[in-house]
Image (tube, rainbow, N blue to C red):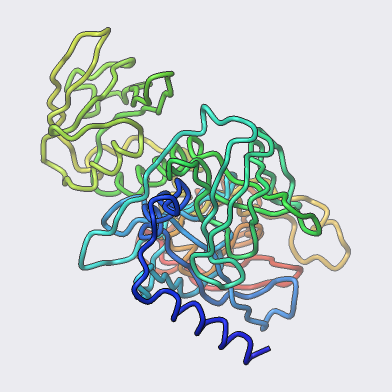
Length: 430
């Protein structure tokens, strides 16, 4: 078998010498792949497999797409969840360590970032609002660890609800018969024009030609929210908007304006369509958030707005986020200070005779760059205590955040239950 592989490779190499592909060979698929490949990255790293022994480390792999030239990459959260060192390899073969910027568990999407000396090519974005059954599609991914594997197929069905595990259900997926394998997760599903119309996410185990992708319109809205949370740590703008698809184009519409915010003071109004920032066109929410990455607090944005079919100029002065903090709910405080979203935990685990705890709070969200993520707290963990106090309710957590320990800047000892075991560590509150 090894000899056959060597001979086949040699034959291809000799046949390629001096040859030049004809235009008939440069099909739409060939052109689409050539355009997209530089913007597709391979992701790999080690993580603990909870289904095996706690000390067992396994190699994870997946794919991502470049959504901003500064190194921001969109992928599936399950690709990077629990990975201690996220390694990203570009088409050139260079490998860089990435940082998790943020994630959304409900849609299984995440943004990571790599530091790059030069701008990366951004993948062309399409829309999932006009997809057709039977439409040809192309998938690119790190299939079984074979980088940049290309497969093709058609759209088999739309709006599929898919339950992949007890904790993960997708409500609206694209079904395709393009080969989707382990390692394809997070990679692009493209139309014949080379525009991304979905993020490959899952395959039906044991079946042939049944794969699924998150519609790109949904993925872009989630990515925009994650970037907004990332940006909002430094600047405050007060614009709440969404992408609206029409028969002609997509547009970014202001849905609401936060009270006493830079947006409200600038005169921006709900219903305004933001068409450009400093002469750079804005078509969707992701364009708006990406543009804000260029600015700092105190700088002014020159917006061109369509208001009731009339052009309007708006000057938006960005503010320091720290100066515009409003009274926060307990859930907002846990997200900001601990990097956690907490929900009600099942009481069954606490009613057993051998349970030493009266209750706890289930971790339903972890902010990628927050204290909890840095200490290895994961989705599904149950927070049962901090310092010497129980955490049965959010009020308990609020009491702890107001304690003298936090005021003195001391780390908080925490206790979580994972797979029936109690784990502990120390959180440095932001």
